[in-house]
Length: 347
Image (tube, rainbow, N blue to C red; front, side, top):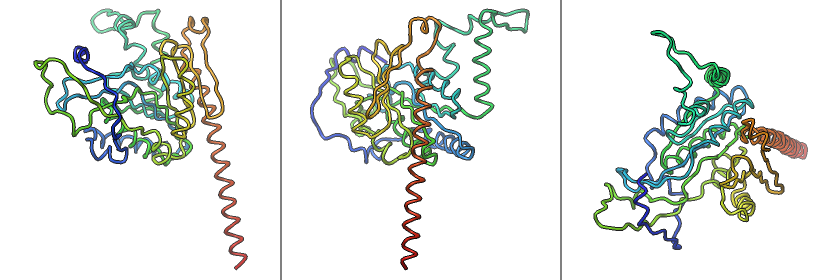
């Protein structure tokens, strides 16, 4: 991203007619790989539907907002994809099949352990002789564990990965995945950890070529990205268990905004975190309850990842949701059958 572009940009917040969610997908182009990703997800969902396995869609990483059709400059959201990639591993440990929908080149499950420049896997290897590469003794146990988990996921067919770049790519893929996963009903889990842009430039307002810098300063006027959590919950996948995330920098806003989201969109859980404490403290907010997960100094020193605690708690909540939903469906079916039989007898 070219940050010099923003130094002269002016953020303007002016009321205007919001972009209509119903027409968004007609007015903005789908990603070129949508059809291929759709086929991949459909096959994955059908396979695990037949086994009764729970399936999680994990979204991860930030989305970009292109400023030109032939994109040179863009705005980006803060996210390396750590929470999503880490959580995907723990969901696999909990027995889920995982669709990992990630920002291109962001962190991914398993390879994340060696992606950062502070833990480059090349530093763990030595060359012996002409054809032997050896892992350093101090690194073998962890590398063996990570490799075994990765290979098991591949062998079991429980992990697929699809990528996005722009916010529009993300929204097309989210809708596609949610609709394909709707056949899973309550066995579907949506773990929406991606950092999604709040503002964008619609395709019809975007310039085709690179914005030239010779004209001096630049003022950006952007539209608000429509809120698609409500159609996801109400239309695309009405029986799934949906988890959204709320990141704040002001502690007084975290819980109120989490509750506002639950009320507005009707989903099951908001995981709230503060920017500066997100690696060791989160809030889990439901309609009527608030719980927190905090790692101790000892746990942090031992390398415990907070996502392990989040996913363990989340799996219990999802199982409870499945039990409640099936009980409600059973009761509803019994009532309907009773009404049908009563009508038949009255005739």
